Image 1 (cartoon, rainbow, N blue to C red):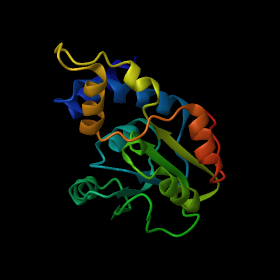
Image 2 (image 1 turned 120 degrees about the vertical axis):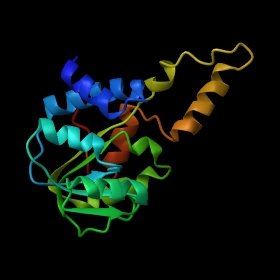
Image 3 (image 1 turned 30 degrees about the vertical axis):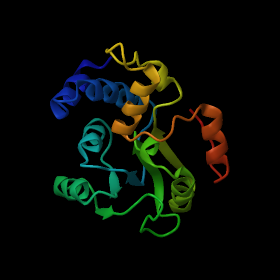
Length: 190
């Protein structure tokens, strides 16, 4: 565990310790296995806090941000991290074909009901040989949840309420990701 990275995330998300912990693990793995090169799209950029931490620990990035929430995109613009920030959904990216060397999306895709159209758009805007770097909770996410602490609520009710609160629509396994990405000329590498 990278204690400095964990500390940075706890400072960034002080009221969300579980999020800070999970992000520190995800981003440590990302930084260890990937270095941004070229022009990138931050799909689901939110307020850019997460991407700011990535940029502090990697090379300077040439980025475009995209998020459907205007409050989030205003915050992202204010960071000065992006050359452009679009307030738009992931299935309507307002950029030309083959605009990006990579698309980065951290813990976003599970929140998108229609993944197929978003994956098609990512494929459209990636240059040949481009990378789609993303993290998502997988099928094991729910199995790690204990359940309700009150005896009158079932585990399934608890997990359903949690999914609604977190706005999680998908928990795909590796084979499901391979199939979905494969339909759009992409493949899972790691």
